[in-house]
Length: 204
Image (cartoon, rainbow, N blue to C red):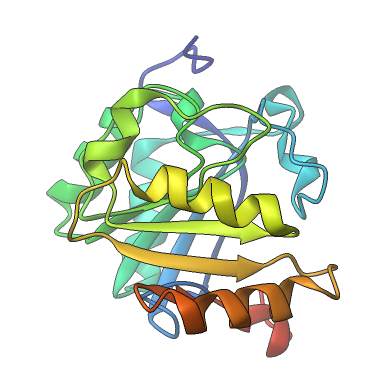
């Protein structure tokens, strides 16, 4: 169900100007729009404060576009929470009219909406992805804590477009996940390692 009650406003956890820390666009000047609301509830989530949308103020698409224009980033990243709990077409339409390159970070747990230049699909076993996400995937990024996560990654990668990029990302607090990923990629060269470089650099 779409939890946005007004088509032109969204519950916002935070907006900030930084660099993309993960995946293909690592290091690129980016403005982040973190939407509130998530029902995936990953146990290792580092943004659990985003789960309840009622705890966060709503902002209009005009306010969000103004903030992006003031920052003048290379890309705009819509993230969460789980952003696909909302109808993202009003937001992406407004950002696209401003000539911005718009990216999405999502678990894919809800029907796809919005018009994006790049989609990072990070499927979670806690809530199955909606079938509509697969065709839109630019890169698939799976967080790994154990051997079964690698099997899950292969299952999900088989459903995305052939031109999509494949990433495995260590779970930050797991001491064994890095070795699992490293050894797996040596045997499966279609996969790459994604690191949370913003945490290594101690930036937002």
